[in-house]
Image (cartoon, rainbow, N blue to C red; front, side, top):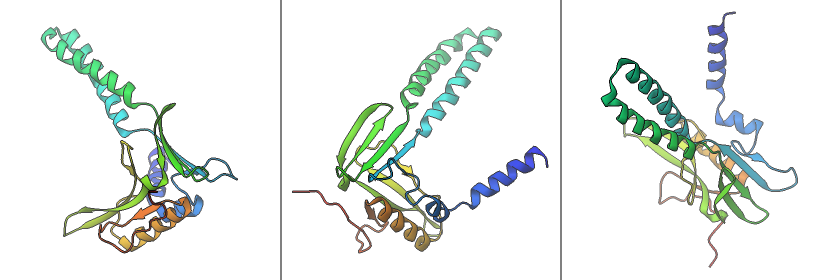
Length: 198
């Protein structure tokens, strides 16, 4: 078996893993339980923009080297400015973002690297089903929404089947113990487990 066939099989296997299968393996996917006895769940990820800025940095370094070797010095200042900007943005977006749901204290927190960015009540975090597309083809996706969470965290792939995705979203919402909001705003399908006090 060649390298390409192994890679093709791996990609095929990845495509077949649905949210339902992931939830069977880990009932709180994409989160994981911090301690077995505690009701704390954690999600760690890196922003996609960090990778875009890293690629931009590499391309700018290559452009500066090529322009310098070709004697095109009038373009060096532009590439140098973009290079410095992309290095700064890569460093700024590189730290991991960590979301922790803590049912012991009824709070959730968002950390960027080792810095606490926000801590608030569980009423400010929820799973939400969103509609993507037009009237001809409507796709659905589950996202994690939280107050002051800078990035939109996709929990599922885009799917045509609303009912299957809704079932998985309700299951995940129940396992995590957080609110769920349906794609239709005036809906009786919202599940509100936590409300703002007062």
